[in-house]
Image (tube, rainbow, N blue to C red; front, side):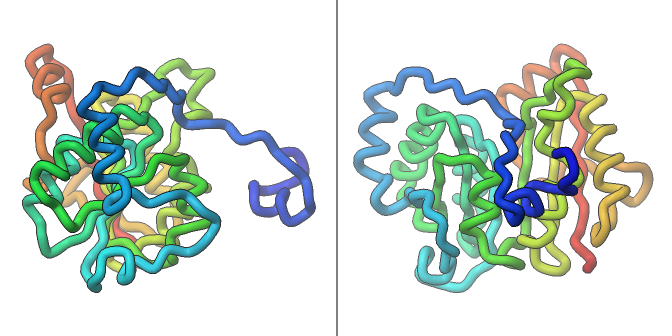
Length: 239
């Protein structure tokens, strides 16, 4: 970043800084069901990226608590959460098109009306589209751990990012992270403990038991059978 403290400062000075991506976009091939779901359900459940602020009340046709998940994979757990909480509205962001298609297929089959999806870089969505203080919960479950030390800068949980999340949470809103990499869990805790405006909701230590609202995925179950741990961290926005 050179003489600039952050991306916004560089942009204000008219300087372009190449951004480090926290993900690798793997397109993959769409199944027929995924392609059909995109065609049938994107018009009602998809949100196109544009540099404009979303009106979430208009988008969902009501005013309700909004939960946003970054990187929902194939969307099974996100759909399960939306179906289990009809009093809340859910937004999922994912860059993997087959995952978006799979999520829409399941949501469409259940006839969900409280779920919207986006296919774009979450950092840019936060910067240009999400209103401030719009979310009651931000979910980041099993993000790419970038386990090699030289790749740690690619981890999405970084000081600048967590402050952007803070802006989008309501006071009292929660930032919920989960990972099966202990080193990443420790990194998350270190970043969050040093972040202004947050408090850890754990009664002791850094981690909390898995809340009932977070479904256990097949991936997680398989890992547990192999003796892998899972760490949940929930931080509350207090200012």
